Length: 340
Ligand SMILES: *Cc1c(COP(=O)(O)O)cnc(C)c1O
Ligand code: SF4
Image (cartoon, rainbow, N blue to C red; front, side):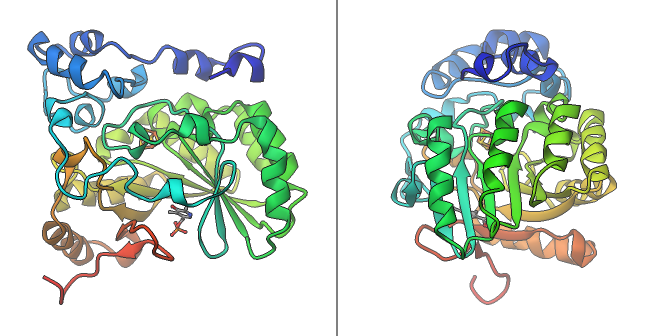
């Protein structure tokens, strides 16, 4: 990442980004966890390293090796087990759907732009662990050609910034992207998929808020919060500032065994999100990524949890349980009922 070239003086969030914990020994010490967890963490971290911002670690419970936030970031021995059937390195077929450098189009009306391959955190279940996003992402030089391709496609009304995490880009780069988007008037919405307001809420600074307010498009931000304990003061403050600027906030969670695979946890997540002005969007079944299998929640159990949520919560607080199936024209709902 060449953050230094996008913003000559690092902003506060950029220092925090650079200071993320990458040494499993340090993480275990901070959380008062036994160093006996170290060999497995070091081994599994070799192919996809540990990375977690310090502020996110502060939301974890010291002394608890099963902490639901910790499990999302600490490399585990199971990652090294041979992958089961169907667990692959490109579970969502991205390598086949690359329309132009950095531009993926799989669904009608929406194009996804991989603005950067970098991310502030390494979630163990992420398919980034294998996909060569660092080569696939559009460096600034290819932004203009990507916009030129979009200008030809009047059917595309929404651009989705994804990654990696697009908010890893500095404000100057995001402004540049916003300016380029003014040349594509048929794109009416800019959607930003990001976990930064959750794991590094300092990212939501004045510069970002100004940049988002200055967009020609309506802005939707889809956060990625998996567990109610991820909703800390930093996120709540960031969410309220974003909402003040008229940005719609949604959440998608990934259903993860041992992290959030029960109706109580997900109920608190949906209600806690709403308290912060964030509506549930999707509950994603795990992408079958090699190394992530220990997070798998079987479909039957996933459907049962979803049914329980529907019973407990008002309709507008129930996320849609979906999975991404390569080649399908939209996310595939895991409908409840008939199939089991
Ligand atoms: C998930 C995804 C979208 C967005 O789908 P929605 O159902 O609109 O949230 C768009 N493009 C690609 C390539 C995707 O993977
Ligand atoms: S925040 Fe998203 S892109 Fe980044 S590692 Fe986690 S799942 Fe992957």
